Image (cartoon, rainbow, N blue to C red):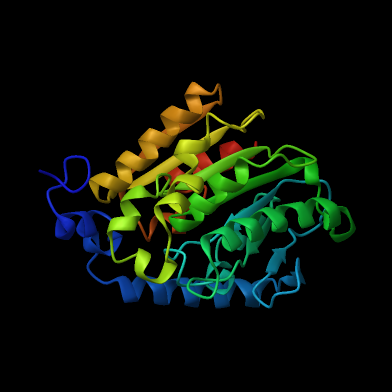
Length: 283
């Protein structure tokens, strides 16, 4: 008797869905998020915009120097839908700026104040707002690339299944959760409060075959030092996207874990950084 797939009990399942179980000092990594983001904002202060009336509905936009028609990476942060914000995720901007790429970090609110439905809706509305208002800011909506890590990977995947006035150019997903059904059985759902119906409605793995739109090219990556379930989730979603005809690349990044993988985003000196730049045509 198992609790989920071949996982014996709740304790084992919760270890599989606790990415911090693979790192020695999570707090030190989160401090790096904050410190690097402060440095990034000091180097190039972002412009902050509201895409809705709720205080959580904000976007930081870091325009690359000598702005012209160029790619924009729109990033959706992780934190298991209940921690962190755009403020700790400014740090990829300098790496992208070196390659003439704009960077936008989306805020979407957190559980329990925000429901899963509200978080997904906000991410979708953020993209729609950027497509409408982008030209006035200096962004080209025809060159939008969406990225997300962990819970942000889930939200980015859900957002990519939305028909927009202009298609997204690419999708980069880092260690995402694409099937929410096991989350229902863990402590993670205590704050989120999803029902079984919610888990079905908001799992991109279960929805990818139901949407009537061309899916963007996708890059799915995860760290070598991650749990088996996080690796499986990415592989399964990559297979589902490929089945729908999307161009898909998937890679396990040596030496990286769930939390430090994002440090390589846009960094041409790393394996994942080079892969992420290739998605933007900046290889």
